[in-house]
Image (tube, rainbow over all chains, first blue to last red; front, side, top):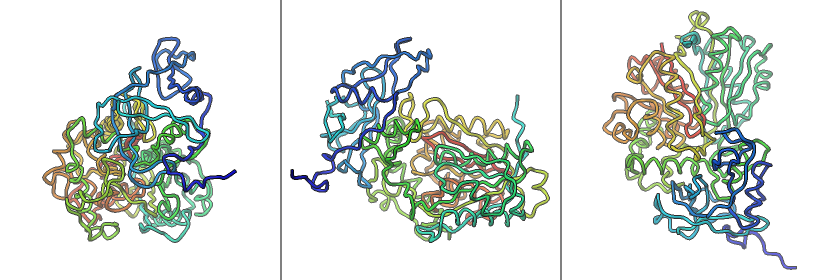
Length: 142
Length: 388
């Protein structure tokens, strides 16, 4: 079988490293494998939380349920990475901090937007992709 | 209960190596050279050292430094987390140790080949079971991998909220290089920059341009801390630790404090500032020189706000018109800052604070009695007020 040398694949298409996860974060990557964006919702008080953790900081419940997000949000802030070169990503590479509709923040790469067109407050939508062994997500402007 | 540590501890020795892009020797050698220089400056024998403190990402362990300097009995050894946010915290550890009598001679040090060895500006993708690595990994998979990009996100938000512009960021960048231009130990010695230089420098991580970024540096700085009684009998004029504090408001993470309502790197400064001014019984108006941490120059603006020199959103006006230059109302980063001098992860800022109070700075502020020194922001942070 013929193999493609990594350097022949554009950085943005190269396989991503396998996620570094633990028992608190596993649900998120399992969700991506199923094409879903999941977030923790506390069974005790209903608070949605990110980043993941075992305990609700509000009611201290250790019980929670992963809920599926609508995949919509707005740009709370952003950057465009130019230098140095990033493994697995083309430069410039835009990254947004999104205010998600369910009331939590999420970092994600922004695809398909010119750097000069990005503004705080713009609506976003989540898309899914598979890169090598890894299922991941990205944002696009809605 | 009030604080009981004010002026109980003093910095009595300062040692530095040269700052370069390639030191040509091991980090351990840099460490022990700076530690020995600091002890010689203080007039204290290495065998008397009973405490060693540093902070995260220093590859020279406290115990190995101790072995190399011929130490005998080490009683206090600690290492603070959170990168450059820890810059002032080893001095706080030393202060608490000598003020309580737990130790008598504590050396705080920072030694790194951060340009010729492990480069701080490169993508940071590593694995370990540490809890913080899980979030780092999640961000890495989205292409957020460098310190510049991580800090660019909150500073873009700062621009949105305050109306600060690239020209406003340039104002600090230019002042830092102007101060560095007369500092023979600075990378920008003899090399002031113009607004055109700034605006034409290439984007690194929007809104940060090349001239907003400190340079990866090789070098070391060490300071010796002892109790006030002992300090008065030593060869250098004691630089008293009026106050030292750490601060991490809820939601503060390592360069990615994105999940709290206000992501501008200011709240952690306010928490440190409140403690410092109370502990020192001083106000921002009493500060003669401010050494404000500048891993990325624009973060100086929210720091000035957090430390009470102006209201939130007003730093862009405060830094105009010479206020933060020599001769201004609050000279800032008189050594050129980390943008202009070198990036020894904040420790070179402590060195400049000491020199200002000893009256030996190259850009000396006449009659300086109180110096504020801050550490990295956008991370759990720390700060000092030093005084005569």
